[in-house]
Length: 245
Image 1 (cartoon, rainbow, N blue to C red):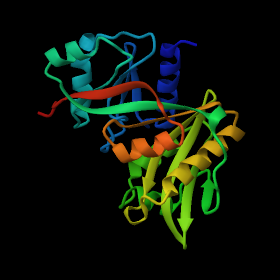
Image 2: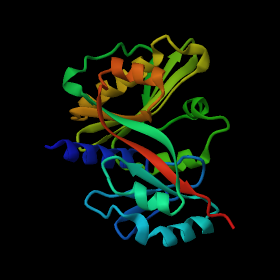
Image 3: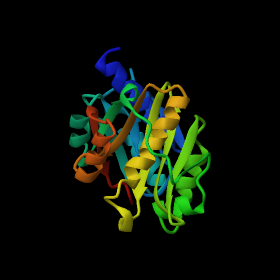
């Protein structure tokens, strides 16, 4: 399998692990419009084998997002060359950079699972650590996941101090929504939580694991490198334009 094939396989897995409750196929593009603040589920995404020049759909896209009261936004992965220039000419400003990392589960060794709780749905404590008040759109997104999934929580002295969830797609574990309580960082709880997701993925037949993280988040990158996420597949950024009015 070529590097490009692997990258698009991971891209598909990550889309399925963080689905949008509202989306539409538009001339070879995937337009997602969940509402809320998450850019991944409120952006237009290229599809494997689809067009790379978004010029033909910009007007339609702007009309859709305008009707939803949102900016028009495109997610631009480096594996979809050709998107940037047309969007820049149309007045779309670039922002953010995220890296996509891969780990080989053949190298993974089971982690200490003491204090780790697993569930097929997030409970109130799990959700509260991620955001307070609880984000209803995140709940809708989680309910939209149709692939094997599990939610991990690390509980210390009765308190949930770290959380993450995992989804398995095409023998790939996608690690999502890794959070550690600010008062409990640098103690290995995040690594323990993600490591146990990797243990679980092996029982589901997964051979690799992937995740996406902000490219300049040094603490997170160090955490993931310690778990074997050392191969960078591609990066992505966004281009947005205010469509209000």
